[in-house]
Image 1 (tube, rainbow, N blue to C red):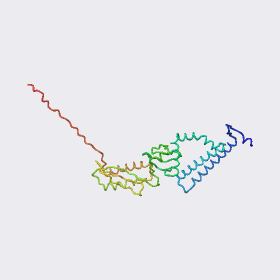
Image 2 (image 1 turned 180 degrees about the horizontal axis):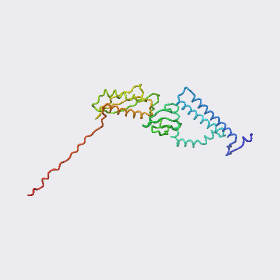
Image 3 (image 1 turned 120 degrees about the horizontal axis):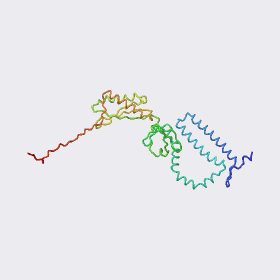
Length: 282
């Protein structure tokens, strides 16, 4: 049995790889896989953490165990880690300069998972685009846009740029719809109608209630804004479209005009001047 375990599979200089090394590595990998499964099960069964925090804790646990496992695996293969690191110091320095953006994304991923300012399921605005966070990894974050397109964002872009998290506090958000009406409009009647219309939509909250603001006197209309609250942040554009349609129908039914810009164009025509050079012929 000892002869089988000590059998040399590979020899290179002072290093030799024996069958026992591979056996130890196989057993160690199996233990790590079982350990990761147990940790994941314990984390996701916890009632003290919300789903987003469970995801972050599980990811950090996986990467921590994976890093330690790599170091232990090298040791089980009979490699001297200190000599290996010392011999490859120059290579590591070169890789550090060449892969600095990759390391920046990696550190940014650790920050995102640790401080929990960005969680799975959050609705965020990045560079003017609205996304829903699907997965946070150490180097990239996977998000989905309103057009159902998946986008892979480098984590450094999320930590170095301005990011609006619409669901950071887990509360509803306020949205607005603007419109213009004719100067002859009864504004008291209009405000009453506009306050009631959003409440007809099932995705609009009744508390806080929608409200209307008279914003400005425009060139050809009176400008109003309708404000409402909703928990359906990711699909709010669909809600706004439904409310705009209902506003249009209601105002048309009530005889309230929504003016559009008009321009009067005057064309100046020059009449033919009489020709005084013509001579009368007798």
